[in-house]
Image 1 (cartoon, rainbow, N blue to C red):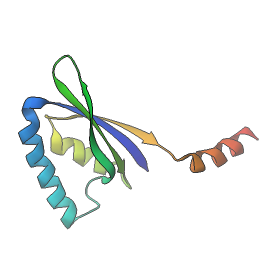
Image 2 (cartoon, rainbow, N blue to C red):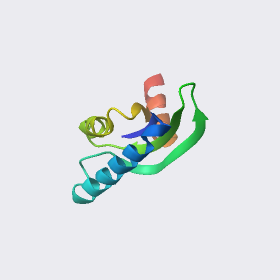
Image 3 (cartoon, helix red, strand yellow):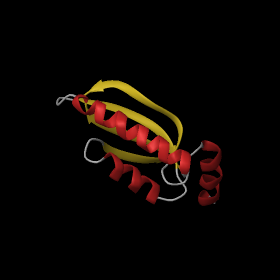
Image 4 (cartoon, rainbow, N blue to C red):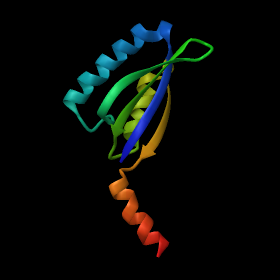
Length: 101
């Protein structure tokens, strides 16, 4: 299943996050199923909140929700996440038609 993963962090944590990202990339190389697969991104949104948090997003694909748990735990406490499921219209429309009849 695909998700838009919105996340934010404080600018002063950037160096810690870069180190953790490198660690996760190395772990993905050894075991691609341990963490969510990155399909698109990561991207910064150029939006900052009142406490100076950088806002970003990535499109992830998961086979097991534990992949998101591992991701969140790995980046705690520097990053806060919001995972929003997404579906392609070609998948959604047949379901819509099925349920309407």
